[in-house]
Length: 135
Image (cartoon, rainbow, N blue to C red; front, side, top):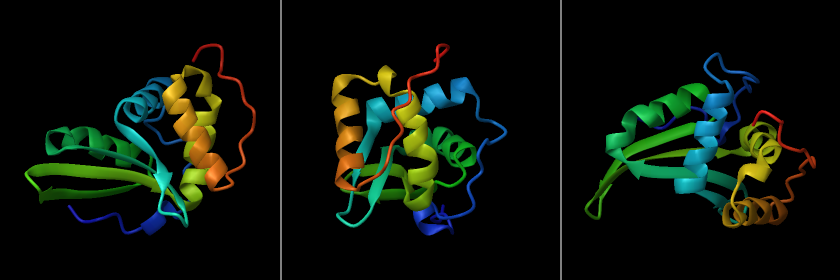
């Protein structure tokens, strides 16, 4: 698979993918809590998720459902075989950060701190949203 042709996820943002519902949002949040990384390269923030190639269907779903994201791989080195999904740039700031912020109360303390640190380090504005009652 080749990298997404929209580096940095700066393509037009699809505010509501046809497959995106509460379950899809919850699934993304669970993946980010369990396997995700909130960070950046010093110049721009990035949320990444890296898992074994056996999870290819999950990565394809992520890329379809969160269409401004990028999917890379499969990579094979150091005895590992994996895909990497990422959200950067405008898509991260306008879609992923607000989504995570809306449901921030569902994050454990460690994950919330990683998210907050990324937002502070890269000056990403966040609304002080409260999770929806049905979240």
